[in-house]
Length: 473
Image: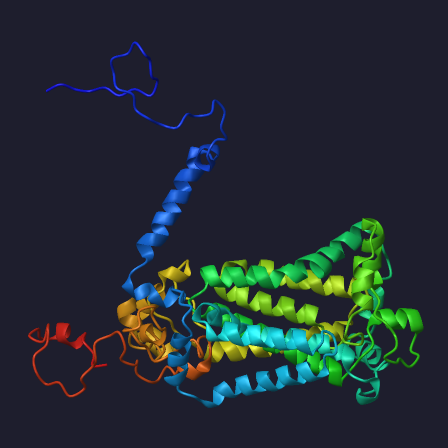
């Protein structure tokens, strides 16, 4: 059999047929895999193969909705079981209506357009799964912005002497004044990093980490806890306005009024160092000038520390160190008293432990990514079950099956329409689709359990201790 050779370089004296191809440039940019070292490419391939190997039909609890059909959302809304916990949406609607009525800028046309876009995003399953848990955050942001439009005659009086008096009574001295007495450029930069830089990027970083490394459903719980915590803090600041330390340093203990603009205080040194007025203009236009109590800077850092410590217990010391670092920076920059920091941390602690005891998915041993989870548990681990089934501490599915709560594999709606669970995206990350650990698991993707079965089962012929290992669920 004759073999035919093809060539890319055509020669008129050549007898081999010409293979048509596009000419190549003599110079070309190398591809990205060629730039990366072989060791890094091998690790990336290994990590990608590991993630794909973890995915199975049971890991659909970690999948996201990709549908843009509003009928899917309406169908989930119709089969949703309304409970008392869903009253939160009435509260958020009331806050939204209040904000629309109070805000003067932008005008009615733009406010109506933004509202319609939000409703459209809630109607599409692809965006609904992101916007629904973020509603408390959006309510807090719009409420904080609307505070500047409230008439001064509707606002309560400003407390100027209360916080310094509490500071001296509780701690024996004004800690903010002591820490800010000695200034230097290195200390200014050291205080600016957590207060003026890391603080504003930290919620986005924590959200990404909880999505990747937390159990499925952790990100919605984090978003709701963060939003309600911030909303509660702004409500307290609005109803109980208190002067910050920079006011005492500039005006003394003279009565304050709402015509006074905010001050950058210690951050003004950063503006002079960078040659701009970013922080000076930002704090001068603050909607809530007298919002020292409670400190939302402290509240943010505390909530982030608690959530990150639950995911990475070995790094708890680092997270606590960041919290203490931010506490020092707030007092050094003359923005908060120590009592403000304690109050902010208290609000975050309340929000976290309420979520942890009810709706926060429990981290399982041996699980690294969200795709590793085949079922989700909630609340504190029952001590009696852990003593009876020590294998559950190692993520053993068979032992954990006896004490997992109702919200399990069937509690997360799968992308396929035919596989329906008991929960939907309206209750994802909320207690309205979760039952106590004393209740039996609901029947969804699992086989039903028959309580009165008297026939023979697999392994029923074994006698003695071997037969005692099987329990009726």
